[in-house]
Image 1 (cartoon, each protein chain N blue to C red):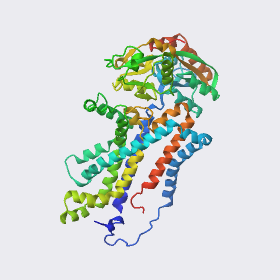
Image 2: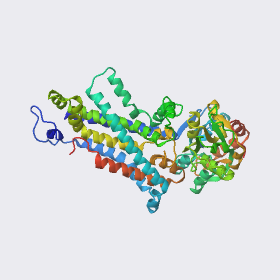
Image 3: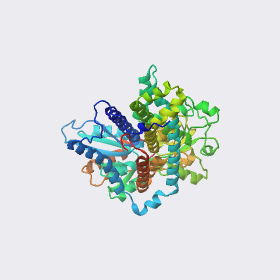
Image 4: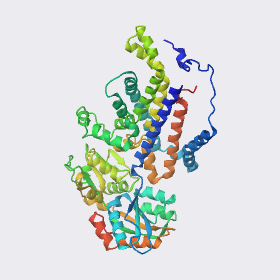
Length: 269
Length: 278
């Protein structure tokens, strides 16, 4: 009997470990707060600004937060990156955000509808789609129409997420119908399928191609102008740091922000 | 060969009391156990509170939801069969034979339990993907695994297999090899011993292991998303559909999550009987 109990206890332990691992895996796209810099480097009163930003802003907003901290001694900017829809859910569930920067107007509207945006959001950047192919371009893709050729394994975002909605808009505008082998949840998943060469081509944002470096090759196409994605930013209603939040928004839309955003491939609204 | 005595408890040895003894569990342990149970139950209750019951029916019977549920059930069933075919021999090899590096082999076999599923997905991709270790061989044979339902089944089998192996191995070890030894001394060949002694002996562990494997396969998410992709009717299982619906229709996501919970509970309750309970 003792032996039996010990065995089932061991089994339970292992199962628990497995479940924990399961959670860890699914948390892959979840938010991870990133703290940059340190507070109170000078005599002014230390203040922490929490910025929730879309996943496609990781590079640019990390750089901008550093610059903002340097320009405002005593201020710490804490960044939380995730998909825009996830961030809206987190804020409506009570996460302490001061500023929200979304990758599309639809998700900002969801937060506004919930009465959680103070004032009118500002569009601070635009983004367009680009075709990403493996560096050797195995399927010889040169145009958007090439993606519809039989035998080309194309991966796009699902229509429910912003990058997929943009792809669907372009399909409707051009009359080119794609038959993707997969409709991913996030643009990063599309990029992963292309850089691992599982897919012959994928539709991602210009900024994703720029950030991916040499792991993928970007092929711009003129029809991309049919679906321009706007990135709005707003101060969260009830934020105790509304003033600081507004000045961060001005910093992002100002000259310093422009330089960083344009270097990453974002367009000017 | 009937072995009725095996279905009950093992015979008491030495001076152990003959009848069943009810052991008292200290109250403080019961209190902690209750907290643990609440920790699991409360989030489920919390989620149930979010269900939009007025539209529940239409949310869970939408074509994409039904397609995803059916795909999940089909793939989980297929991977459970694969787990049984591969897992029982693995459990036997681990429990009944001795070979060099056995401890290392067991640790490796159990790896999918502790690996984040997304890592499992990357591992599968680099093996069965189009540019993977075996992918090109499969492609030459005309079998395309990437972005297919086969990829979903492989991902589910990968994460579920250790559950079956563990369960069957634990059962084998608990019963010991004495019945098999007796059968062998009576002249039964190893194969006859397997079919007529070992397999009936481990049946309870086999069933509970298969149920756990099925449940794990049903909930598989990370490896599938990484390795198989997400396309309605082909690779988008219920967990992937829930994840996607969450983007635009949180009500549908919650409703589908409840369906997944219900399926898992029904499966566990009807088929999972831990040994020691009758």
